Length: 256
Ligand SMILES: C[S@@+](CC[C@H](N)C(=O)[O-])C[C@H]1O[C@@H](n2cnc3c(N)ncnc32)[C@H](O)[C@@H]1O
Image 1 (cartoon, protein in one colour):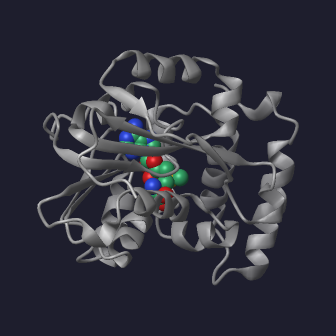
Image 2 (image 1 turned 90 degrees about the vertical axis):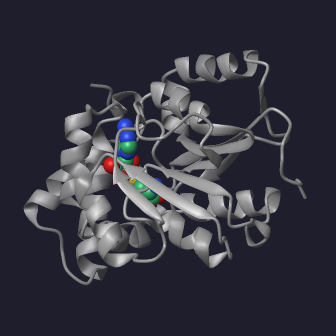
């Protein structure tokens, strides 16, 4: 298990503070089970699949409230950046966007709010998060399924014009990037966040990115990666993420 032991900030300390601050502000406090799941999510940088499913299943009902409290920025940043490259309002109905690691569907909701009329599909390894999305975000996704990004066997090669992934890569291992590349159409875009902690602690992420660029078909969009604060909450001010955007071959969309 890789933890934040190399990290200057002590996880038990800041998660404890976060949980107390949340208890004072939220609609309802976490149960003990939810608190344990939150601690595990923040402590383990490279969790096993079982533990990801268990933790995100446990917090699926309170996920949206909690990330609002954290000032979680990633879906908004991804949608803003994507919309600058590919104006979402102008996307036609025959376009497909895959939200990889969709969770409770925050990204999809933002994408629709920008006027995206194409096909929106989501996949997440946590069944309870997908269930939450289906019950609470009806009409946003055309299809949302339980699935593991390291093996998206239900998605054909080159199925999506745009693949977007917010707050997932890093939790999902490096092989998941190969799957995302596979399902992106030639001429399509892959946009995702990766925490600075992951990228800085494990240098093989850099190697992985270099490998993409050696496959001639992939190029990094100029000006990326960009770096953003992960959260607006003061207690997490040490957290940042990189936003990567790759294009597969000659871009089919007009980049503004
Ligand atoms: C921090 S949440 C982000 C959810 C959503 N993208 C958002 O921005 O709100 C991370 C999500 O990644 C999902 N996840 C982690 N590993 C995964 C994998 N291998 N395949 C699919 N989903 C995965 C988790 O279940 C969880 O819903």
